[in-house]
Image 1 (cartoon, each protein chain N blue to C red):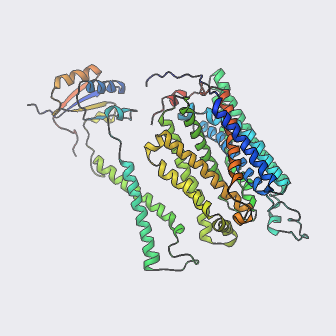
Image 2: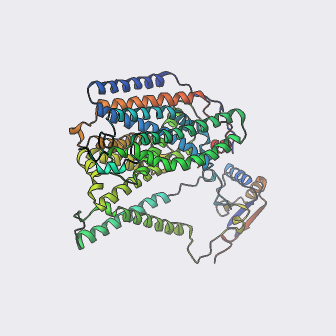
Image 3: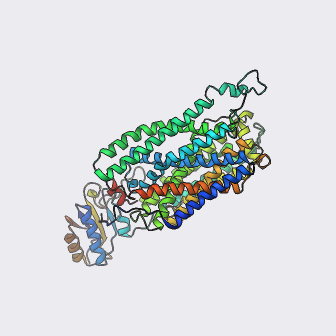
Length: 178
Length: 407
């Protein structure tokens, strides 16, 4: 039993990498993830990545902001300290639309930044976890889980055949942990 | 990127049911106008003619604006749909003639703009003397008013004519010369258009109630005309696709149009609300009179306006899948187009008929008939213009980007 955890195919060209993905799929080898230095059109569909749910989260963060502000205004202007301002009703809604709008955006933005950090395991002061450092520079990486896909030689062959410049067998998942 | 096999010189044929229906629409409109004048409702007929002529001209000139924006932004995604706004821009001169005729006849017969155009309003010795109108008469007098209409609408029409002509030339000769020219004159046009449309809106609509003024009114009208033009482009595009044309349009193009309609509906609401909030908050009687009329005699239209133009695009187009769906985008575009009719209705009618149905306004045969007439006229003229040239600007420099558009 080898200790290899991940097999990384390192490509110098995005088209060759897409070709590699096709080859692996044809042979029923599951792909753990793909790392590229730039966005590539249509790669989500090819990998079968599910659509991000960030927009749904954004909606609920926004609604939370709206409700918070309207509740706050109601408590302040009606329950706690009613004042007569220009003969208007105490809860003069149009007056508070701008601030409600601001708080909706504020909650939405902070909520999304928080969700982003939580889902990518990134936050200030923490070094990012990277499987191959050159994926941030000039290489296109396909990562394959070596524990679930046991035919390591066949994977090597497929990746090389598709044009991989280098195939690595890593015993650690990430090269940087700090 | 895969190769594609589209018919680059596909041409739209304007025949059959659509043509007959649009001509029927024009006759319905003509019948409604005749009915209006024969039944003695001159003012109401003129108000509706002004509403629809203004709407027609605004949609067409925003078609020219759409072209200018795409050229100045050097946008690639839209290169394959440009023939639709070009057909709208090409129709602009017809719309301009109709609008100026309605305004001129309305002024001449005193059915429109009688708030600032009547005998003795600016004469201190007359019993009709109105100090406020006299103060504004340097700007708001008939010759200068008509001159402004001619200059503004004329300059939009000239730009619209040339920007479509250059694109047709490009089909024949290729090269970048047409694109460079379009870019240069689009930059100039945007500056002219940006400064003159608010004044155009002040003149045509706001001066119906010449005592009242709002500096937001021009942007409010700009937002309305721009979003209704975008919705028109979406409707034409989707209906053409349903009829089997423009197979190169994918749902990423629809997504872009959907974002535009969504975004500018929100912008419309923002400007509408900016005008409303300041008046509500300051609570000065010379300003609140505008909303007083609308709250008391047009309450239903006032709220319907917000539901159709803000809530429906907000809730129906927020989701990504909805923007990419032909049927939902078509439905929302039609709601927004009807919504902006309501928007113009509650801009114009309370200015002419202050007390609502009691004083002569209403919603009936006249409103529906004249609206149908102009829809028929718009369909007929725009589709005739569209059928003259191929549906694809085949030598547009960004055409490949548009054909491979993917979001």
